[in-house]
Amino acid sequence: MSIVGRCALFSMAAALAAAAPISAAMAQAQGNCEWYANLALQQQKMNLDRTCGFAGPAWSTNRSAHLNWCATVAPEVWKAQAKQRDQMLAKCPTK
Image 1 (tube, helix red, strand yellow):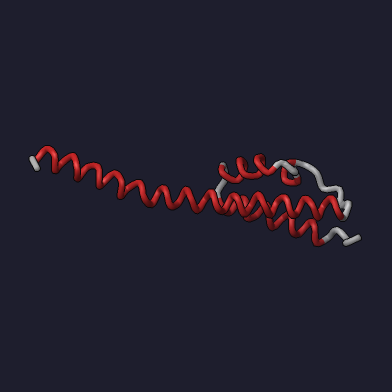
Image 2: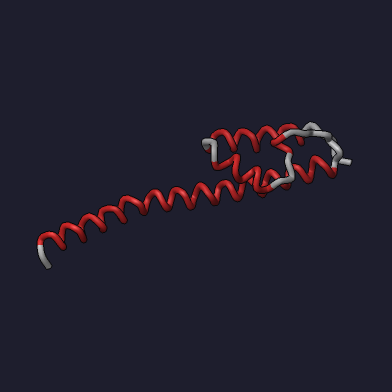
């Protein structure tokens, strides 16, 4: 293989190696947002079942809205949102 061919091959290998951690991080972030959206829907179901009356974007039944929002914020933010919903639900009596 010529020196040019080896340089091109090395460049491609370096690019793939650099992209691998990003792809893994993106996959993990997507999985986290899937978890977050599922939890948000479960919490909203509890809100509705108990007739707590909580409303607003955090209490949406739109799974895509939860996924999209999660993808735009840091993990600390969506974790805090889920925790806040839990705390609110804990104050709403079971019927």
